Length: 501
Image 1 (cartoon, rainbow, N blue to C red):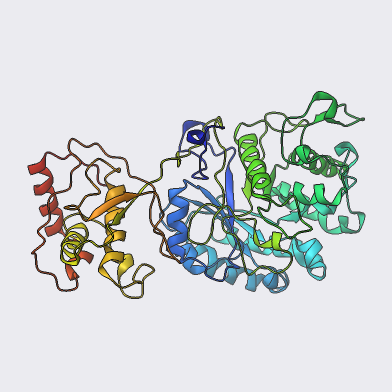
Image 2: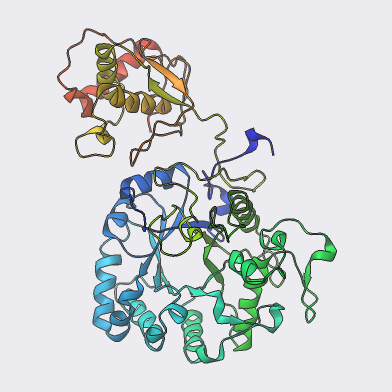
């Protein structure tokens, strides 16, 4: 595929008519086992830049929920496994959990789902007897707050609870789990909720010892004679993902439960592994996730239910270097902790998917060796009349260090350059700035590579006076009416028309 058609995972869910009813979506899981976890505001900035409209949290972190407020992003919060026993044994505990972690944030934070635990039946079997109670208690708390119609309650399950998954028509639930699963499914049916399933074709492929072809796991095209055929239904399967989804449908039918939609709460592919994990590669991860996104958003559906797409949360947003286990466990992320992509997803022809071309990513940086007084003057202008938000450079904020004028100027210059849509002349600043393709991001200080939309008659920034006074540029962090008035006067004089977002 041509480089200029390679699209970063600036993905997800375009705001388009096709998705107005939210009948299908691609979301992303946000794990937190990082040695240097970005601040919630940085996480949300990344989500917004990537047009990610659905996220799943593995907890109900207050900082994240506050940062997600007023963004419109749809949020699935979770009751962590360590809290399941308490919530499942006490209606009062469940009510308090909902009050503190949901009601306190809704509707500013658009919480749409509560995931009660994660793979409880397989990872925390001692909590299995009270799992359904936990869901019912949480739902009762929502009912008491008149939120039961706005917020769904379910529990993500591992696909390993489904036995004999191929052919799908013969699939059934582990018989020892049926005393829990049947009432669970009836609860989901009665509340119009979802059957949440974690689907990992990577593990199915690895554990098959060569029986499952790699292309079949990765959604790659197969010759007709290579497709898997269900001998009972004669349905043809071209990928593991669809076969597992249909196995879930057939397993539910086996216990006389139908019409519960499936939502995949986790699916992905690791981009790196140990020496004994040769298929955990960037290429395979890119192929799987790119194909999965297109498969879901094209509403292909499954052989059993064609045209009925299965909304899916990708696993996951960041690589989690603190995860225990083999190297692959740490490398499921689409991004590094500084917001740079682990790989460029190939999302051409993905229907209504919104994505930005990143083949020409450019940044604006202070020129090496530039006069410090001219840099200071340009920095003061950018953070003042230039309307750049320079708060991230305040002491204690992510971009304060290194505390020198060149580093701070680079941040401000780049922000202005992208705010102006990378228009010609907006990365000059009297000759002390230059365009670069090297991302200046460092640590938790993430530099924007996304431009705002605007119309420019003349994108040249006003000249700055290198002799202007500076007292550690206190003016640069102010955003008041005086600066707004000054800016509009400057724009009027220069004939600039700018859309200020």
